[in-house]
Amino acid sequence: MRGKRGLVMGIANNRSIAWGIAKAARDAGAELALTYQGDALKKRVEPLAAELDALVVGHCDVTDAASMDAVFAEVEKHWGKLDFLVHAIAFSDKDELTGRYIDTSEANFTKSMQISCYSLTALARRAEPLMKEGGSILTLTYYGAEKVMPHYNVMGVAKAALEASVKYLAVDLGPSAIRVNAISAGPIKTLAASGIGDFRYILKWNEYNAPLRRTVSIEDVGQSALYLLSDMGKGVTGEIHHVDAGYHVVG
Ligand code: 0WD
Image (cartoon, rainbow, N blue to C red; front, side, top):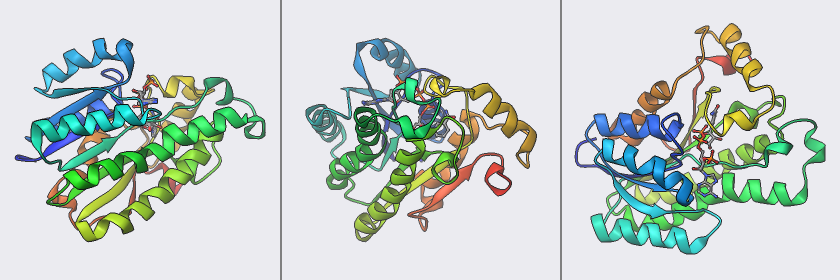
């Protein structure tokens, strides 16, 4: 990863999957830029950025086009180019991550789709002109896109649309040597996951049933992300790569 410069979006704290990916990329020699969402997370992200000698390119809320524009303008100002982008962003009202999917409100459906799905496309469009020598875009998805998982509800629908977006973006950006892939991670106890009903049960279920008889860590995801972000994965695009201790072959 030496000589590569990447923007990592979606670090909330040191348990975030994006943090596992950022650390792995930095350890392999990449230079990083991070964003944070709002002042509350600024205080958490700044010391983490310092640990990785990363630039902090500011606040970014993916529901605010101006804040996305500002982040890419900062990246252009500092680096003039971008080699990779990590999108580890999702949101749903946690009151709707329990009970029946059928009860999803229109407002939360729209917001979940905007933040968890459309934002990848909005960010890829801004990254494209900076990825002059090609690049790699990586997002995070979950098995609830493929199979119905208890309580995942609207997030499952948003992740299914996200996975389809990965494929459409891969086709659009392929001629510019920009690759677009997703890691479908097994359940990991993070801030976002704590909003999902019965999450501890889901963790245990995966531990007992996954072929590797364990859950995955943010370090596991980080190592696999390295392959997709670096030239080791340069023949891979439009791929949904499971990093879930094998759960998807039995679940
Ligand atoms: O089990 C898990 N934790 C899995 C997570 C399994 C498989 C996939 N994933 C996905 C998530 O759906 C998400 O896409 O991985 C991605 C990263 O999630 P995470 O690491 O589990 O969660 P977390 O550390 O909470 O980071 C997600 C962050 C937000 O954190 P909070 O908890 O404050 O909502 O997404 C960011 C925010 O930093 N985020 C936004 N960023 C910009 N604009 C926005 C927004 N509007 N909303 C949320």
